[in-house]
Length: 274
Image 1 (cartoon, rainbow, N blue to C red):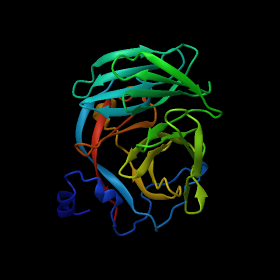
Image 2 (cartoon, helix red, strand yellow):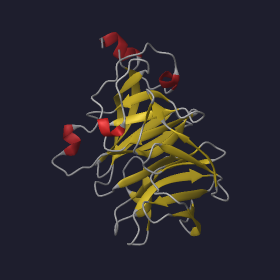
Image 3 (cartoon, rainbow, N blue to C red):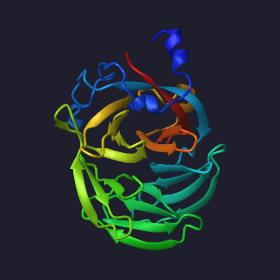
Image 4 (cartoon, rainbow, N blue to C red):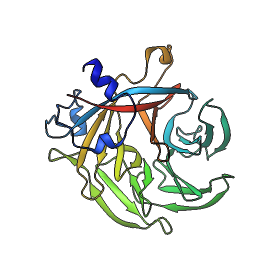
């Protein structure tokens, strides 16, 4: 990509992701177990790092939400799972609620004035007051719990399969589900979710890719390749895990991503591959 094009896309504009760009080859070798097949008919994007922020390298990030200059973060691992409020600029943990040591925390979503947190294999989710982290209730679901987001009307949940489940935000009853597909193949291992401009962004677990999904029909409309996002100087010999964590500041059109045990949260802009 030439210097002029880099300059053109230097400023982050998320609408570009959903716009009409010339189609390009999928920009990385896919993991065949994920069901991803290379195709030329879906636009792919890479990234530009716009800002970097410190992140607790001991946080096994399962869910990430940004609101009014702070992150809400759900972390996993049995004995270390928590719900956190984190200062965006400094990475300081401002508030923390540890969950039962027998539970493995998963994705979170901020819905109205409540935070909803899933657990992995315990078939139980929790509802907390956003400000105090007081537990307001809990609910059950028949599948594993991985990622969760909302579209303003319903909650959207993943369970590691190729399905996305839509839930009533008051009763948590399942209203319907869709199967996520790309190139006529199901895309499995859908993990952390974020709803952005009428699309569901989903980490595909154990890959460096994010699928951008039409929630009306389950079709992948775009791919975002975050290969080599974690910079060598940020890794600094630390043990890190996979990419996981997507947060979107709708008011300021800022997109943040991180990973499990990563020392950094990145604000990124999107650049189309050609």
